Image 1 (cartoon, rainbow, N blue to C red):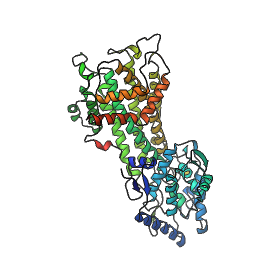
Image 2: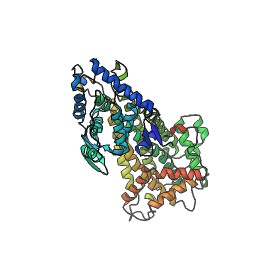
Image 3: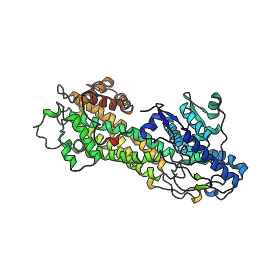
Image 4: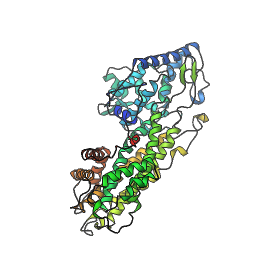
Length: 522
């Protein structure tokens, strides 16, 4: 990956957005982009000077769009806009998501259709580079006319208001700017509107969800393969010939991965004539279920990468006295896809819980509750209660926020997307999914130990070894919550999937080198 990203020129992807957020990539502006931004700001200044009536430049907002603002008050209008619209409530979103919001907003503004001043754009870039990240409440956006409330909080610090994360603490923005000898900005005409109009709250939640869900999808395949091994299941349902006659790309990718993980296993090849005709669906149908979730992920990825390279504020400044007041700020294109992906993520957890239940039933040669001395010990009975609770919670989170709309702005904004809720819910489902998968991983590793001296494939053995560096085999009861948390961290950090990929490369398994590479996140 290159070490520089040119805002407004280069195409932003999920991987690049996360690299910028993580500080692995530096954002810059080309001279061509600077010229476009300056030209757009000049168009706005000319509109003010000529007295043309253009929404948001010299008029009020929303239902006040017919109220004309004098040239002398256009700057005050923009400051008042940020202050009046900063009405978010609830806990702050993670600073990393707020930072991604800033990055996506810079990409939109740098395209030269928003009338933003170059110095304002550079100040946002400076704040992201210095990790001075605004505190943004999670609730308050209805996902149309832009994510108004969260974006207002995001950009209050430009004018010295609001709060920021600064050197490990939450401090008033004015204090952080003073410490850095950076005076607050005076916004020009339209700038406040350009800053708070847009879908960056929705899009940033989508970016982080896609990044996390991609990791969960890969982990689910590996953990599912480990569970199948512990249950002495068959890898025959993953034969490519079966999936060629129902060729959904997601299904084919999962089947390919499972075949690679299992076909070279001692365990899998030790029972060809065991008499079991078919495995339960949660084992046999992993390609179909995991694959459907991958399809939902890919759909959201395609739409999100359009959105994070789009201009979503209003009005759009196309040229001298050429503006369009439209609806590019409406979040519906992402809202529906986010709700779809939420179902996809929830289903990964649903089928994982079923595999966990199978493992503790005491079937296929495994001890009941995965422990030899059951009775005195409850063994692994209760962690599955947790997966059941989390799966049920995820089902309630699957109600599509995008199916709702409540009129706002005295009816001027009479249909809204609620996409901000869709984005937050998807990340909540992934939070729960990581714990569900962690519990299945806890069970699968324990089950594999009961299959010794037989071994699985090199990749699955490497993953089992990694688990055992964090969590030991259990021969009696202990506080399993500690184990669950360790494995959740192992999964959420990406270490587990990284170990699987490293082992696959070492032993020449081809988990990700298929014709279905578009599932990648670069």
